[in-house]
Length: 231
Image (cartoon, rainbow, N blue to C red; front, side):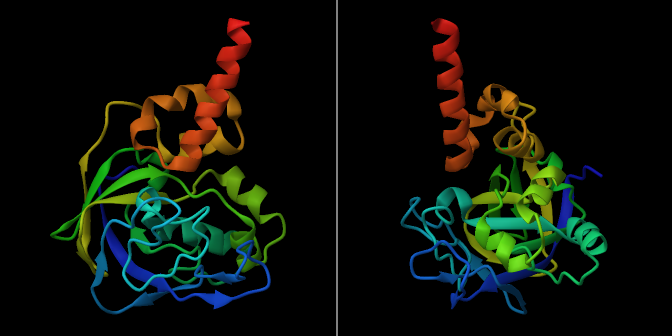
């Protein structure tokens, strides 16, 4: 289903806690996110490498790879959690994938990079790409071959920047209010940077909206390919 409307099922925040498996030098992570039963303030997170989460009370610990304005909020669909729940034969509660917003009624694979959502009465968010799986995510779930399995599914949820700040609560309606004039979806960009690098040159039409890591991967590939053809 590719719907232009959805709903926030839960808003999830995580506290920093020490674990043995993160790459962060201080050995802490905020990936264990839990639903809260109150409105949560959402604001721009700040520059990459300096700003953490855009969700009030939420810990983002490794600022090298997480947080900042272009990764201020992370959304994942309940429908995708349900699919993984069946495949993994385990209960996956809202927030299990480290997402800030567990949403329902939206196929995030087909969200366009750069499309904007109005969430509730005040907040506007902009899609910047999908989540690239890392060691912390894999070890948090403790599933064999998780990075490869997650990449193969090409349903990575949506990273978001905050365009208009405000409060978000469980039950808030989500409406897609703008879609840019290109065809680069979250799933297409994710496949390009993980499993099908031949697609990278084509996704650069979405460069103005892309989150920094995936943009850098695409730009490096395009520069390398251009150098080969020019030579």
